[in-house]
Image (cartoon, rainbow, N blue to C red; front, top):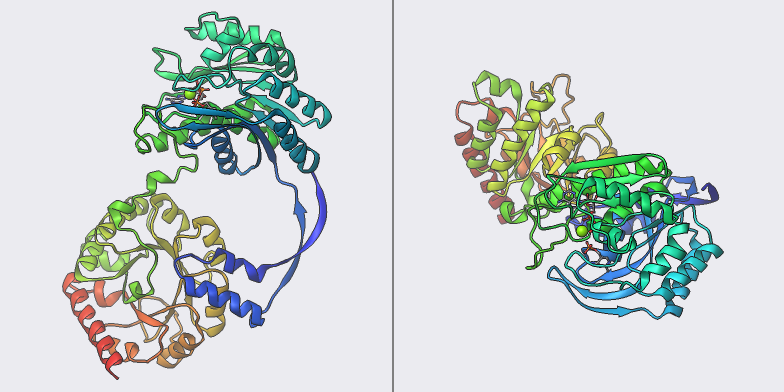
Length: 547
Ligand SMILES: Nc1ncnc2c1ncn2[C@@H]1O[C@H](COP(=O)(O)OP(=O)(O)O)[C@@H](O)[C@H]1O
Ligand SMILES: Cc1ncc(COP(=O)(O)O)c(N)n1
Ligand SMILES: [Mg+2]
């Protein structure tokens, strides 16, 4: 590990790479402007960093639940680079393994040479090694190019019961690989096979098997109990030559356990590559598998009885079908409702009642602005508001609190000039979420665009008492910002039914709508006020297009 050389990095290119796919035009414009050098281009020098690297030597699973594909996903999820030497290609799905095509030995050697001689992985993890010849080639290559640690998952039979490496492999495992291994991770069947077929039925059996396999030569042995019958938890036993450790997690009730073994071994390898101790690596990897299974327990991929799971733990939140979730549309800014806790208190409304009325009245986007709420109460309120908004296909944003947005999977975050920078919020929230920034000047609008925001809020347009000491920019200031902004703009500050029309008729294409607080929420009927304002806005759009 260490610093190897220096490169010059152009940060102004970052936003174009991070720009959301939902606002394609912004991305194109952004690049063009960079090419025309309209933007100041701060050049920053950074040292290149060597990142932790695992090489997996394993078989491909066409269903992508196990094998190479599981290893890649597990390493990616754990923030570690993963290179791949493929030993066999399997035709495999959630039903079982339909075919195996072993990669010629010379070509396995060539792949190993390519990666080991150039890329210097920290840790090698092995999975399916389908022939004695391949095991021999691997051990030769590792002697030629030693690595910091070797994790051996002695894959023999898939969870579906199909043979991936026959019993002929056992001798070469015992003689060639185990003596080089820092840790070997057999499941019950594999541990039994390595020990000549002894039955393993209890945790006590697992302990004595771990000890016997240690005697064969592996420095540490982890016997996995995923398949331990009649066990209400998932117990794995580690023996380090001196002590036994039991790692227990809850047993997740799910069909989606295909690839757990590969994932556990590559996560152990990933943690070792990151510099963890072996004990900590096993503990973290086991916790990761348990969490990923829990996240994925209800996902449905394939019709067989062994489903894959979601290594990135994202699919659970992927409720596109429920929400009609769609990319950000600048026209969503038309009637932008911003909640206010004081007004809700004054009128005796809960935040959810307020949001429900605004959405039913025709608000096109909602922002929860709860400056003083307790975090836990705010999160609960945000979750129920999100349900309401999703039902109506209306995006829900959170003011300032990226943590709340992440915790409830809201559609985005709106930040002010003294909040977290948009660039940091984008890194936290990822490319799909909506990010808005409050801007008063063309310069701030420019920065928001560079930092990867999706829209800007500009104001106060009219004087207001919602925000103390807020400078009013007026219609002229708004127009200036809109003309300079490459992002869509929503106008904010003292706007209501009586004065929305001149705002909407400013005649600048980037101005997409108005954001309102008091005009909706400091009123007796939020529903009626929203309906009325919506009518005014739609009328002024019709007038503007007729002109
Ligand atoms: N249903 C489950 N709930 C929680 N953890 C599980 C479950 N099934 C397997 N595991 C864990 O997944 C890892 C892989 O175990 P196992 O399924 O026994 O290996 P293999 O996939 O090689 O057969 C182990 O840490 C095991 O405890
Ligand atoms: C290519 C390949 N490698 C390994 C496994 C074992 O995974 P599991 O025990 O979860 O079926 C597999 N099924 N396929
Ligand atoms: Mg399994």
